[in-house]
Amino acid sequence: MSIHDRSGFLRKIALLRDSVPSFRQYPFNLNAVRELDELEFHPKVTYLVGENGSGKSTLMEAIAVALGFNAEGGTVNFTFQTEPTHSELHEYLKPVRGASRPRDGFFFRAESYYNLATNIDEMDREGRGPSVISSYGGKSLHQQSHGESFFSTFLHRFGGNGLYILDEPEAALSPSRQMALVARMHDLIQDNSQFIIATHSPIVMAYPDSVIYELTADGIRTTTWEETEHYVITKQFLNNRDRMMKELLEDGFE
Image (tube, rainbow, N blue to C red; front, side):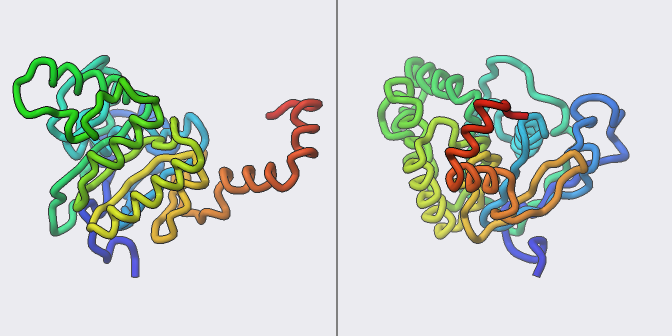
């Protein structure tokens, strides 16, 4: 059975290639975008992995904005804009949704999370409606450590039966917190949720019922956890620390 045959809030996205102005200009000149036709999503978890600069965040942002989320993160109800830096890629993506609609949704973006936390505090100071921070555990995200504030969002704001798009959620999480994140994901998946995650963490990308897409110089390919560079390098380092450290310190890393 293909991924496309299963249920899910978001089944796939398609690039409207005939409408793209030029594949020689950003963001369409990114290898992952230039070779993109359609990308199918697993009904539970879809991972995007790849080297820095491969286009993961650009693609994640475009998918989120095409679905109605704010480019800097949050729910579809967030409209703040700190800096208009997102690309036009979302205008050329066509989301193909499933038969059912999610009751909840969130675009979590590590690099702009500070801006999201600031906007929440500002909305509560203005007092135009119910307390926003109460949905995030009741304590200002700025009054917690970076990792605690990340996990407060995963734990308190994600309510289930939702579509959650996470861009590098491990950025401020310890290894034990990353494992707790996977456990929290499983609880939400059991409650009919779907995740799309860009990550560098072998722990976060280890959820078994999932698909992993690797963004490479040749485009996007399906891979397995054990075949990802993240897993291979981490395993080699842990199994051969002394030898690898000797090579790194004497020869450098390329």
